[in-house]
Structure formats: structure tokens, C-alpha cells
Length: 288
Image (cartoon, rainbow, N blue to C red; front, top):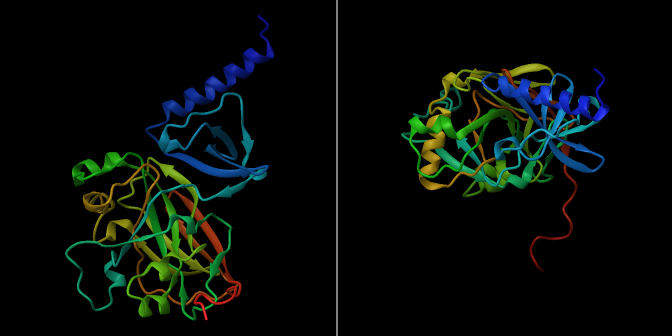
């Protein structure tokens, strides 16, 4: 029996969708990509992207009969959050001689500062002590308002890798860490947004120009990501797509301009960014 081209195309799309649906309990990969000046979401299968109608955590579904080669697009950060909440001192190895706090230390950074894989992190021109920070990032999938730890897993959609570029001299000088941690183009996330991983036990590795300089498991967190999400939701309403960062481990060091830093989260992939010197500021910030 012969079938029309349209029929076969629709059938192929149905097979892709059915296969993905049947594997939803397993690991799934999602990307956000730019093609011909347009940014879209997609489901990643091998080296092929199947475009989605919306972000996966907003219920985006596959566009029937459409696929894109991964090699033909530019990957963007696989997130588009309203809030980006970071954690201070969540690994004992990053505390030095200090005692762990009774509750997580939180701060918010502007989500507009987020960049993606293979984009340059831009060092503010007036910092002399800019550090890398390898972290894992969880992405919220449902509106979370005053939830319990037992419920929190139902609100976490997936995970990605993150690099929290940090100006240590700004941290020491300022009352709050907004400038030190939230300066534009210093929060890198990617390369993929992944679901189905046991985010309570994933290895995080940081490499500076290929040298392993950070490494620890999320099982070593002082406050688990479920505890983090529950705690944050007491004070901040988390929306789908919002980010919660683990905090970093060990002792970080200065990130030289021109060198690449990689964050690898087990099961997620490698986020790679090169540090670039920022441009001089335009004029004065204060009127004469």
C-alpha cells in the first residue's frame, strides 16, 4: 500500500513523540538554541534537535515533522528564569575554619546576567580578583510557594551546570553581593537542561585550562537541593524556569583573562567559557 509524503512525515513525527513519551521516566535532554536569529527550545536526541512549542517546563511539545542538526545552531543557556537564587557556603570544604550555618545563606542575582555555553564571561574592568565557581543548577518546574521538603522533588524539573563568576574584591568591599555575583555576563549555565537524573548524588568538576581545580559530589551538600527549594519557597515564590544554585566547593582561585573554565556535572555535560576583559566604562557613574 502506498502512502502520501504528508502521511509518512506525520507518521515519523508521531513515532518520535511516542518514543520520547515512553522514555519520559528516563533521562531527557533539552536545549535552547538560536537559528537564523530566532531563539527556540528543543528536545535533544543524539545530534538532532526536535523543536518544541515552548519551554519544556512550561509544557512545550514537539513540532511535528521538524528537526534540526545540533551542529547547525548556536546553543544558548538552557534556561529563561525570572529569579536566579544562589547559595553561600553550602559545601563544608568551602567554609575554611568557619562552622556551618543553621540555615542556607541566600542571595539573588539578576537573571539578565546569564550566558550560555561557549559564550565569553566578561570580567568587570575594575575587579582585580575575579574567580570561577563550579556549581550545579536546579530548574524549577512548578510554582513553589511555601512547600515542604517532602514535596520539593515534585517542583524540581531538571538540572544543568553553572559557573558563578565572582569578583572577590567586590564581595569584600560591598554590603551585599549583587555587584560581586550579579554583574552582567558573569553567570554561565548549560549546555543542556536534563531531567531524570539523581541530582542528590552527581559529581561536579571544575577545570581551568584543562587542570582539575574543583571536584565534589552533590551528596556532600550541607543543604540538599530539596531542602534548598523548600527553604527558599518560605520567603520567595519560585516560578517555572527559576534557578537555584548549589553553591561551590573547595578553594577557588583567580581566573586569568583568556583562559577557559569548564564545569562538568555528571550526566549533564560540559559547560565551557573563556574569560574576557570587559570594556572601559562610558563616562562617570556619578555626576560632576
